Image (tube, rainbow, N blue to C red; front, side, top):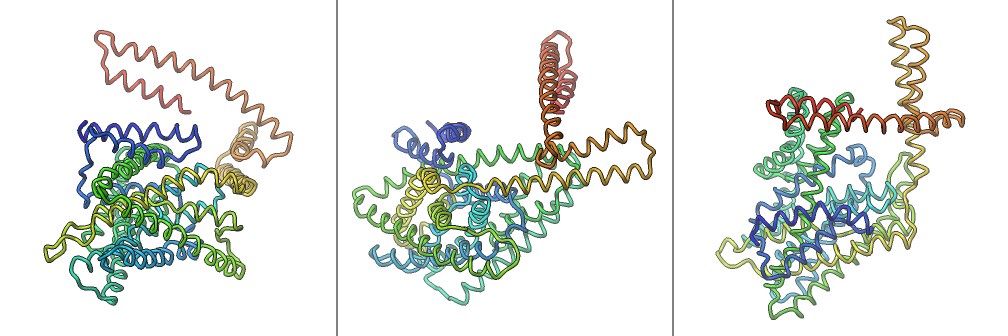
Length: 528
């Protein structure tokens, strides 16, 4: 099997892992990691030889952009305190604790190399955490915090990692220089993200065509990452800022086609890239086995100690951090998503799985220092990092569903339904308000005006039947049943029409372009 065939196998696994995970209640990223491990065991499967410097730019931008599309800037702003405690403070604390322990237990490991190890395994993976959280039906407040933590902790960890690697390679380190680099990296990233987001927004409005707009959104994350890195900024933070800018300002309420098609395309991209990323995590078993040849007991012991440190530090940090956030939250009068019980705190603790970023950073460690000497203990660092990733991702990923069921942590469906009802009522009122504006400038027949008023109310009623009284809800249910029947019959009629048109495609003298144009017309009609 060559590497191209291996890529196709991993992509196929990415598609299949989603329904298999849904069927057995297991996270798709964890299944892909297990598939990668299974593929790494046979001798005929080649070792993956992706240049380390290409892994982060190829995988992180689309994954981050897809994740940001599910949230908003206002959500981050409202939850800045818990996100800061998890995404910034906890990354620093984890890096420090891992560095101290690794420097102590691994003979000859330099301080800079130990800090690099701590930084690359400090950030929980945003894709794994949100994929697991979304599948388990956790409360929205927990999902929001996990998303915010996952998106921002990579920024902090990657900057720390680069500072530590630079110190290990050059042999020089300055606290003031490191702090200045951190600030400048963030400033450059924010500037690039805003400028590129603004430019992409303007270009989207000029393109007009949905296909071209979606194509541009596929390019924007990579452009934002690469441009920021070229200017010595944080590529991750730049992608986040660009994505948040576009999510906030590039939304046209009436651009239905682009929105529906864009969601579909990005769902496909998210599924495939996530599958490849976590498949790559498992495939790294090749390198781990090669590194551990003859040293299994020693290396596994080091990895086990670091895993224990990573897991325990997260728990010991979350307990006081959650208590502090609750105390501060009680003094405020605005909404903020925080864990409301010790059960939710435990779920947050066990959701700290490592993944793609950690693998990419481990593989990106230079082979040699500036002096030409081998990078100190590079093989040991990569093995320990792989052990932490597999242990947290597989062990925690497979047991998290059981833990959630055991603790009884569930989404607040009543609150979600109440908010949905409020939005439905607002939508119906907006429709009625627009109807009154139309009636003020156009004379509508009484029967048409009455019909439009009924339609305006039905807009909200179809979203949430709770906004109507019992009689109206029953009437709406009857209309829905009738509409389903009409759509079923109409669907069968359109199916017959499509089959007839497709049959004409193979007839002598038929113009395939005209046939496809007619078929697209029938397809669009089928979506109405």
